[in-house]
Image (cartoon, rainbow, N blue to C red; front, side, top):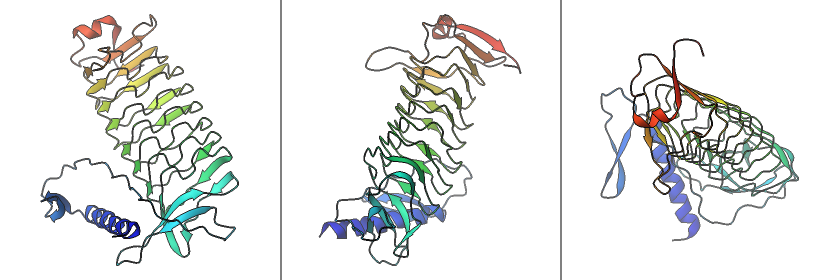
Length: 317
């Protein structure tokens, strides 16, 4: 079976999976295959990350149309939607407008490393036909200053914007419920970020080394802050941890500029770094750091919290 045929089958399977999820149909594995099962009557929604779309190697279309600045793939004609996958940017940089259709077919996927460290692109406009980015799609765009994310995006995969040194602001739409590890690592100009409700984890190294990051707003569904999530965010001086957070991993805020931390709920579990055996979740060496916890919450008498200057707070920060 040829590579393109394998890729065609993969596209159909992904489309079928997404169609079942969108229609409220659950799936389970039976002898290694996904089969639909009847939905239960339970009302609790179980969070499952959108799978990253993996594009296998094939020969992309190299267009002679000067208005199209991308090499691209077209999925084969099947009973399901035909889609365009952007494979490589071949334009001259500046402001890039990603087309919503090519050859009359909607553009839905941006492949891995489409821009591959391009240093001439300064801004990107993404159409609402695009539903998926592959990991590293915009990685190391050193001069990228702005990009719009539409409400059709639900997953920001790992290292998707890593190393975008000039990106100073980005609005994550409320449709996003998964942000991958190191997604914004080394975005040294980024000044503020709001994590939408529905995101459950701040994954490993997501905002590490974002040295200009001053404002972080965490959504009400964040439950876990992973290793090095905000490590070396030296401009971050204050943060409020919502009551949903129940676990913070080692080095999560190590090397940051934190001076005040406000906890809305009970003291979270602290997980020691397995490799270094270092807790390092906050810059405990800073004599200026004050940790505030809401009056009436529990767990603040645990020994590891006694290393900090901790105080209670009521309604005013």
